[in-house]
Amino acid sequence: MKILTVIGARPQFIKAAAVSNVIRKKHNEILVHTGQHYDENMSKVFFDELGIPKPDYNLSVGSGGHGFQTGSMLIKLEEIYTSEKPDLILVYGDTNSTLAGALCGSKLLIPVAHVEAGLRSFNKAMPEEQNRILTDHISKYLFVPTVSAEKNLKLEGITEGVYNIGDVMYDGILHFKKVAEKKSSIIDKLELSKGEYILTTIHRAENTNNINRLKNIIEALNESEVHIVLPLHPRTKKYIQDYGLYFSHNVTVIEPIGYLDMIALEMHSKKIVTDSGGVQKEAFFMQKPCVTMRDETEWIETVENGWNIIAGTDKQKILDGILNFVPTMEQENIFGDGTAAEKIVNIISE
Ligand code: UD1
Ligand code: UDP
Image (cartoon, rainbow, N blue to C red; front, side, top):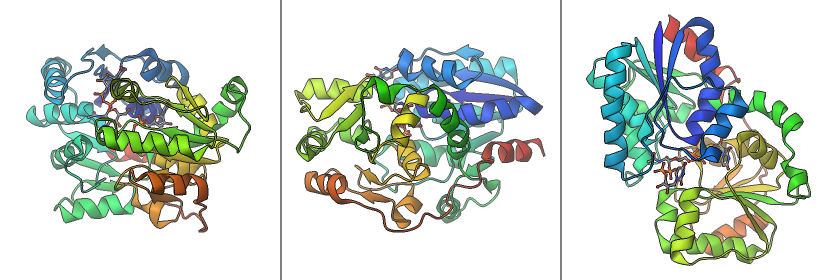
């Protein structure tokens, strides 16, 4: 079978790292990189470190508005789908690359498989929520990572082609944790004391594009006076400069880092404070308390399990989370058994 996979943003490289090589044991995979993320530390580093196969095509779409980005991808994907004639399109997550990949397949009547289907924040102002809903409704195979994702689809009338196979990022972490332990030297490089710093990421549009929300977040980090390590997403860096905000001495700001360094930082952190989807999950995998700087989460099981709290962007709530949040419940198994990639390939093969 010929499977055409579309990826384009950082979290999709990490998900494909867990799945592509499993696909290639049985099938012919054509890998398309949309070019949504293009900086070396937002793209190339993941291909180099994680053994992701070299993309067959790079659309080099780059940054821009949603219409420009999604529209440019669609135009270029249509040409590739038409000439390659794949049997199946595979997309991950909820970015503009996901929507373009799925929509183009659907219009050309090529079946679409969506990995990380069914997630909902119930906040339609999020571009990701729009991308997810649209992608799910035009997909033939919906690979959901959690029980709540399966329920969300059922509430929207989608019951056929839904498979709860667990989370491909859990597969990835089980493997790459061991690699990171051997290869990453970031703890020494940054002269960090293990278990004594907080790892933070910020990039969600609803936070970066709103001066009050971003200001609250940064003030909470500054006022905590705790040592914080912050690999800064380029989107956030740009807005911080535009708004004239600054970090105080307790916040170590670094460039975005590769996945192995990121895992090492997560593994040895005391706590994780983030607005990322993937990083909330990784906090859970690593058994680290997580403070989520959003008004809601798609990963509700991590909250129900007591390991994640939703602080929004209320300065006091974030501060309280940083200083005082300690999980008290035992973790349940939420994300499967680490064989999600194999399950996907088996289902597709059948
Ligand atoms: C995108 C996804 C988001 C995902 C995130 C993962 C959409 C709508 N959003 O958000 O769901 O969580 O990726 O990180 O698809 N930039 C660079 N270099 C790069 C990439 C981006 O400088 O290599 C800067 C540009 O100023 C760009 C901005 O970051 O305008 C935003 O990039 P974009 O890909 O549009 O969205 P993300 O915020 O990265
Ligand atoms: N990540 C990384 N380097 C960084 C920041 C994040 O490798 O500097 C990884 C992180 O470990 C997770 C993924 O990127 O696996 C999450 O991506 P991001 O937060 O950009 O997007 P989201 O998951 O919110 O869509």
